[in-house]
Structure formats: structure tokens, C-alpha cells
Length: 339
Ligand code: AHM
Ligand code: MG
Image 1 (spheres, rainbow, N blue to C red):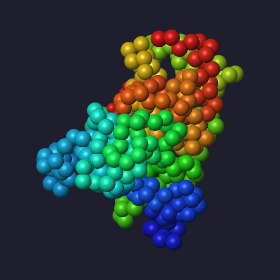
Image 2 (tube, helix red, strand yellow):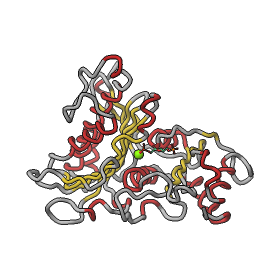
Image 3 (cartoon, rainbow, N blue to C red):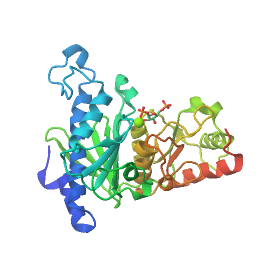
Image 4 (cartoon, helix red, strand yellow):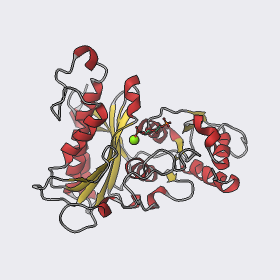
């Protein structure tokens, strides 16, 4: 049963933060609500994913007049739709769109850019495993008019907010606007995100390591040595960890954030920059990791300091508990990172 006096809604929490931190603007607050609304619509559609074949598409939200869309397209359209006419955004970028996404010509451009991966880990949909939406918000650099590439190609440390929504056994929104990481769980009967995990902190050391080990032979010696370390090769230096890998960044990161873990998607000799995208995946997750006391690197540089050069740029990612991220960096120095 819900006790109204004990719950803090996402709305109430963000308003309180605004009072506490004068630099927080009402506009950013509203932008986060826009994203939360998109998340609820996406969550409702994901819940129906397995039913469409047996029940047909009756009641399915249909944004383009098609009877049923692939969920990642649906999620992308929903995010764009929730943001593009609000007057808060001057441009968007999405993992699903080749180019910068302009806002409609008849809308006054706002002061933020929003970048997103609308449905990360979408191959997990077919098997009913957790997927997510990742978002990243910057203040525009250009003055007036539509946003430009310069407004989205900013290093991650300039993010004004970032977060994700995980569509798991429950739906959660986890975000930071620079004052810690806070988690909200969707209460389905009232349709509100309620504060469930305030001030989330990553443990100093990881209990889990998460990596796609089928790539082992293609990694550098440094990454191979680090992963062998996580398996307990040298217990004096590194206590053996447990292995967990879902193949859905949001779900793997979320578990590691709560329980303590390290996630790696290193480069390999087929994909020297790994798989994950700097702007839609690595930067927002790195921002959250650091806000929660963790760390994120491409092996050498702090992810948040990388200057993006292209919208869909990929970078190697090592992210999680600070001590373990350091261990990987040291291993790369000792054993090399040549592919
Ligand atoms: P996607 O954006 O196409 O869904 O791909 C990203 C996903 C991440 O969620 C996950 O960490 C990674 O791909 C898993 O890749 P792999 O199957 O190579 O282990
Ligand atoms: Mg993705």
C-alpha cells in the first residue's frame, strides 16, 4: 500500500533540488520530466512486446501510422516527440539517427541539447531481459537559432545532466544533475516515479566484473591480464570477482552501481575502439559513475575529458568502482595495449 506522506515523487525531488542549488533552472527540471514522460510511454510499449503477436496491435501507440513498429524505432520517435516542441531544446542527437536532429522550424529553439540512445541493448527484447534508455544533456554553446554540431560534440564533463531508464523487473529512472546520483522507481498504479535510491554510491571495490569474454583472444595483453586478475590469477594483488554479463549496458551498469562492479568493453583487433558510442553510452554513464564515486576511462584518458569528433564515435570503455578501474589502467601500462 502507498503512504502518500512517505513518498517523494520525481517532480517534488527535482523541485527541492532546484531550491537547494540556485544554478539549477526550472527549464532543466521540465526537461527531465519530458524524458520521464517518454520513458513511461516506452515502458508501456515494452511491456506489450511479447503480446503483440498473440493479441495483435490493438491499443499499441502508433506514431507513424504503421500498425506496429520495431521497439527501438518506437522509442526513438517517442523521445524526439517528447522533446522537440517544448522550447527547451535547440537540437538532439540519437544513436538511431545518422545526422543531428533539428527541432521543427516553427518552434523557438531552447538552451539545451539532448543526446540519447533510445533503446539500448535492444537485442535483449526478444528474450525478455532488461533494456534501457540513456540520455545526456548539455547547454548549448552557439547563440540563437537551431543548435549546431558544436552544441552536441562536447566533452562529457560539460554535461549538465545525464541518466538512464532501466526497463527491468521494475522501471527505474536514475539521473544526476551534478549533485549525486538518484534513483526513482515507477509506481505503476499511479504512474509516478518515486524516490527509491537517493544519493547512490558505488562501493570502492567491485564484487562483479562484466565483459564479453568471447572477445578474449582479440584483446590486448593488458586487458587480458586485467581480466585474468579479476578471475583470481594473483589473489595478493586482486581478490577474485564474480562474473556477470547481461549484454545490456544499462542493466550491467545498474547492477554494478548498486552492488559494486566493473564493466569493460575494450577495443579488440576487429573493433579497435570497441563497440560503445561515446556520446550516447559512454559519456552519460561515465558522468553517473563519477557522480557516484566511481570512475570511467578508455584505458588511458578519463572518458569525461574526451573531445568528441563525430556523432557516432566509438571508444573503449572501462567503467565502475574506482580501484578496479585503476587496476585495469595499471595493467594496460604494464602489459601494453597493442592490438
Ligand atoms: P545497442 O546500442 O545496439 O543495443 O548495442 C549496445 C549494447 C550494450 O547495451 C551492451 O553493453 C553491448 O551492446 C553488448 O555487446 P556484445 O553483444 O558485443 O557483448
Ligand atoms: Mg546502445
